[in-house]
Length: 361
Image 1 (cartoon, rainbow, N blue to C red):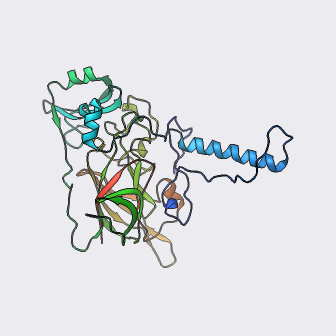
Image 2: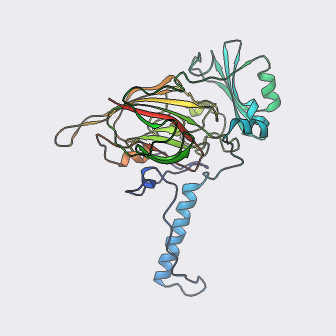
Image 3: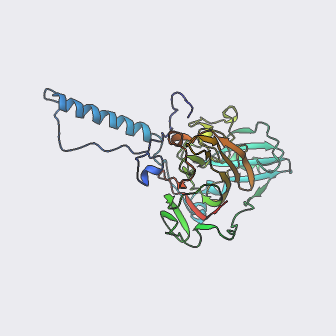
């Protein structure tokens, strides 16, 4: 894990998990509670035991506050597009537009009639963009309406959305959650993290679909805009987050950058940014199609080959046979293994997954 220096406001630290539990399988933002049996008066001379308890309490509050700073929801949260459209006029403005077939426009809602607008030369990311620096900035609703007046709104759909599992695949989430394959909660064929596969996997291909909540008043570049993640073998994380409208070069981001771009949607957490920003708007179903080759070990346990991962996000390859020398984020502190579970991280955001299947190779 690289050192990022002082963390910016709104950054949410992912703490080391508690071993041996489902909660420990993902990076929690909660610190252990302090014992409450003994109460010390601060007005009386402080004895060593009281001082220790006071110091521990102060340290715990500091850690909890630091770990969750920026993690509390800011403003309303919508999980249904029909309701969002009826209750927030900004929801109907945000989205993707094409102008003269040579300009792609992404409009991300910031709340209160404000929007982050990125204009891409050649077309939208993954659909014509020439990868030059986008023209980006914050605009109000009137300015957005003027910009897109002659543009065509486009609602892209992943070409692998609804893909059927092949014969022999483990169907974790189909019409319902299979309790023999995954520990997690949900209903109606929707899985709500945290969740974890019961089975451990080595080499596999995986398909999953996810939907991010609409949280316009949470800072666009923060970790509080639909944060989740898919942890392969509980070590290598593909980040899930609403970063619609952003590119990974912080020099081309025109709002305060509150978290490392390698923590944004599609990235290998804090290890490598995605090759293209393929995040769709919140409340639009998205897909990850993942091909994973586990690390190899000889008879003595020495690693002889690194884990290799390809990720296709909404039909576009964003990581092509990338070799990972170790796990990502907190996963980098765990010893690599030939087989491990798949973790769907829970960070207090109402992200949902559906149509999740794994085919072992």
